[in-house]
Image 1 (cartoon, rainbow, N blue to C red):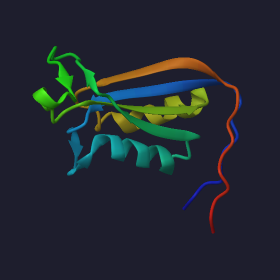
Image 2: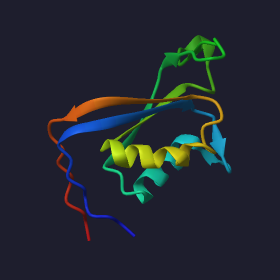
Image 3: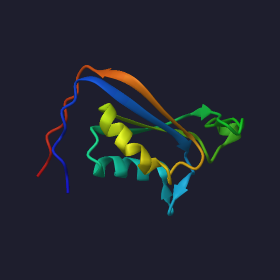
Length: 119
């Protein structure tokens, strides 16, 4: 079931989830599961960004540089919607993010124009 493209302008909340590229949930990437759950929840949008270098709580630096190949680069999933909808989505992350960082911050949506859906 697909939801119509939501309209969102003005005050919003950005949910950012940092996980490792190799983190899995039932044999699929955690970032993929987060995006699919956000879509099913009807949130305004979600994107995944792959880092080229970084470190987290383990203090181990992961990098994309050729001489030090890493299999666990940082990945950020960014979701934006109203505060109410984002906070309602947070319990979905409880069983997905065993290692990582979940952040919320206020933002302002200036323009949000969805693409026309193909039928």
